[in-house]
Every structure is written in C-alpha cells, then in structure tokens.
Length: 65
Ligand SMILES: [Zn+2]
Image 1 (cartoon, rainbow, N blue to C red):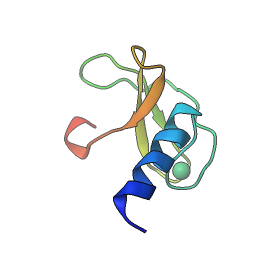
Image 2: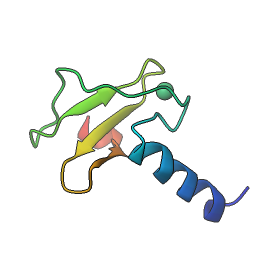
Image 3: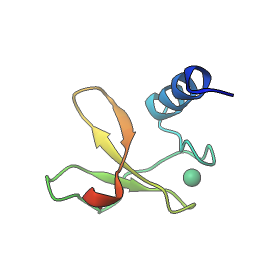
C-alpha cells in the first residue's frame, strides 16, 4: 500500500478516536504535553494528542512527549 491509501485510513481512525496501530479505542488520561494539550496513551504505547479545534486525535511526535 502507498500513502494515498494509508493516510486517509489513519485519519479516519483518529477522527473515530481509535489507535492507528492497533485499532483500540483511545481514552484521554491524566497526561498533558508541554503545551497543555491532553494526551491519550494507547495500550500499545503509542501516544496521541487530542486536538480540540479539529475534534480528532493526532499522532504525538517523540520530540513532544
Ligand atoms: Zn494502540
């Protein structure tokens, strides 16, 4: 598969509050990043940040974590 297929799938998963790695439902917990954004940490250890403006999650880059 190429990015043209993978990226829309990842976006769909994130807007449905699902982990792009394992498909589990994401839940916000107590974590916050250095900008005060709320973080969800999946059971598979992937981290996502909740973006209020877009109403979806996005991947957390390692540099932010
Ligand atoms: Zn996961």
